[in-house]
Length: 512
Image (cartoon, rainbow, N blue to C red):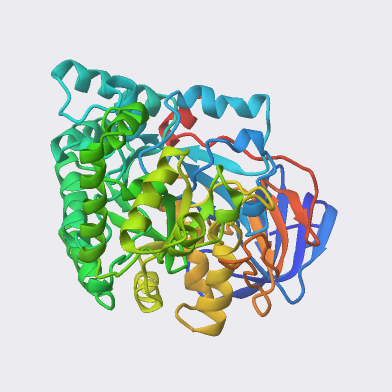
């Protein structure tokens, strides 16, 4: 119990606490000292440097976004788009792409502090490229050993697990055995396997099965990145995918998924191209596309893939950022083709895709999902909320709105408006479940002894304001954010404080 002689850095009064466990909210006061929660009680006494009146607001653990792409975050240390969503901790290195020197990356906090806490995965695609470039073949024994050494070093430096991006070159060239071999290294270090699977469309069930096989063979937990049903052929059948995961969990494999709260995905234009075109790197790809016969073959494969998705054209694909011509940003590929070529027939559309790749490529948004499937996946107790976003620069391009609104959208649309989740369950998916899954230490709960990463929000007004057509808007209803007990957002304004911390795998952190 507290006494009147106790001194705190921050005392938060009159809050409704949603503590991250999934239990119903309760009223309490929270006292913070030296970056930790030191008291939680109905009525605390003592002196505090700062007293926050949280009347009318929910106090929750800071949100943990386990699927980010922020390798450039030290150029944008405020990470404002994440802070304004209530996110206090990020996990980067997803989808098979990461830094390969984890120690140097996390060590940059010493020269460039961040507002947020940061952990990283070591990515298979980056490791493979470092050893084998973009070769479309199996590794030699020596190459596999070199990849294992890179992964082991990254884990020793504090990486929390291994990621794959099996739709991207060079990850797509890897067979299951190769992934298992590297995952075994990660398992020995106590990490987990996080995968952008080999297929999220017509082959999603087979891809889930492969992810589960890797976890079972290597003996480590599995997180399936941004789980979705991205094909009209399987719309309304999310439960078939979920049943595979439920069955694996029933067998004893720790499988989770993460998910963003939207019906469109976002990745590169080149992900549309056949893998064989991209083998060997960009120069080789450009050489192939300069061959008229090969170019015609690529265009036919693009059309065949479109037909397999039961689509008539490429209007589902929208340009988010195109460096060669900003006029294309925000337009779908049918509109872009009409603008660029004066026609929009299918042959012209496939030609336009190749031209845009040749001129530097583009970031894209792909409208491939349905909201009932999103909701079905969201309801599962093993689903975490994650943005799949990077640090946003206001006004640059027409990016996916998830980078501005993901957490707020869950709280506003899927909790308050649709009733898909209870508020307490939504918060658990953003806090204690990610902390538990990625072994992030004493984070994700409002409990004494836990790190004071906290978010204060109005559950009646919180909402996302970013849209596909007009994405550069922060959410509303997020009142304050604390990172390690220090306010980084207060009364809806950034404070300029940067108290974030590099998070290393638990065993590594304990040894420091």
